[in-house]
Image 1: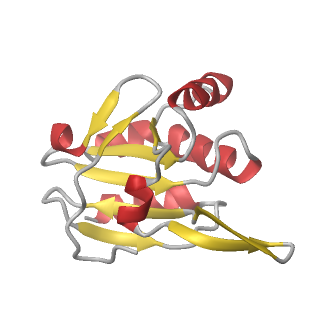
Image 2: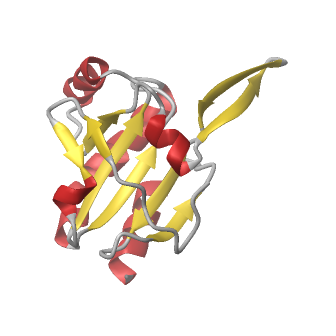
Amino acid sequence: MLTIGDTVPAIDIATDTARFSLAQHDGKKMVIFFFPRADTSGCTKESIQFSELIEDFAGTGTEVIGISKDTPQKQAKFRAKYDLKCHLGADHETDICEQFGVWVEKSMYGKTYMGIQRATFVVDSTGHIAAVWPKVKVDGHAAEVLEFVKAM
């Protein structure tokens, strides 16, 4: 998993509306949150919480993107269903998840499988990781990230 001080890998990802490239947002702060699957309870709650604070993030010059393995079409349905305001990246091949170190082996009911570890990264205006929240607990997380960004 990427850690504080690491340079952020180049991101060029399909979203539900267009392509999202980190280069397009050069010089801006960025929140990148990874979530396992669109339209599931925890992922929905997390995405809604970031969306509710999107204007506050924008006020600090910070872009917010959530990334999962879902397709752009599924992300579009997810956005429409919950009126989500943040960018929603579709890392269907898991390339970006692997670069960030969040594509990990998980286990449930004694079976192991590969999946996305819920994690959040804050990127500073120079393209370096300023903060990492591995294994995120959803309740209050978006507000905690916002407070960190405000203090940068």
